[in-house]
Amino acid sequence: MIAGMQVTALEWTITIVVILGLFVFDFFAHVRTPHEPTFRESAMWSAVYIGLALCFGGVVAWKWGATFAGEYYAGFVTEKALSVDNLFVFLIIMSTFAVPRIYQQKALLIGIVVALVMRGIFIAVGAAAISAFSWVFYLFGLFLIYTAVKLLRESGHEVEQEEKRDSRVVALAKRILPTSESYDGDRLITRVDGRRAVTPLLLALLAIGFADLLFALDSIPAIYGLTQQPYLVFTANAFALMGLRQLYFLIGGLLERLVYLSYGLSAILAFIGVKLVLHALHENSLPFVNGGAPVRVPEIGTAVSLGVILGVLVVATVASLLKTRERAQ
Image (cartoon, rainbow, N blue to C red):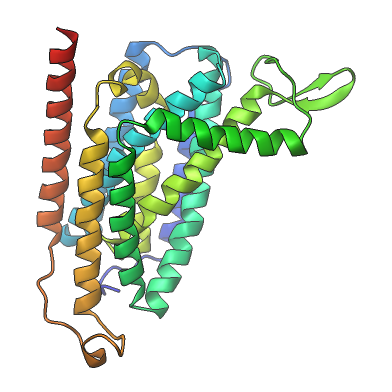
């Protein structure tokens, strides 16, 4: 692990408390009373959360230096881009379960909190694995390259793939839990003929939670390819997830126009996968690779990584908007 970034237990505690406080504020200020947020509300709070994320990068630069700030920003941009792809899946889930718009906020916020918890677990496991075994970078790198190829193959068929996953999750849930056929406001559990039953809103939450688990499997290895600092991995993920609910309502209609986003994300994951493999070779300790000695290969710096990630996202977004504009015309 790269030395130099010392984060105290107090700093960890303060960070986690502040992040949890922001989610609690979001619930009581916007989600507790069911409503469909306006464009103005979504735009304002999306800007607030992105502003907080950018300001936190300044705090990292002030306290730990520009190198770690660069790693944080690269991780944040990557996780935010992956989160936008997640929104497309959430949109499919909401449509599949016909979740009323006024109740979608609650489902999204709970799903995002579940995602943060699961990512926290994966981050801790990943940090422990990296500390104990340097060859884990080989696994992370190869897994990301595999994921990139899989994402490329599924491009254009996301709806069918997600509906298959949802049907499996729902079928399993219905076998185990008594379910109701209709919504009961924003309740997750209701009563049918005097018996407790889960509502379709809870089933939608289960589908979102399962999707979050799959997203965590992709996103955590990806960000560990940009920074090996667990604190930066956690905060980049947390700030990327913050404001995701508002972003869902802000760009919901635009998601369908980002037809090349999957291709861009595939390229980014493949790039980070190659970066991880190169790093693993540079730190090699496997006896059957170069006799257990490090391999002299070039390593990709943070500035180059950030430039490639931003460049790919810009190209994918612009190409998508141009393509869908031509199609509309």
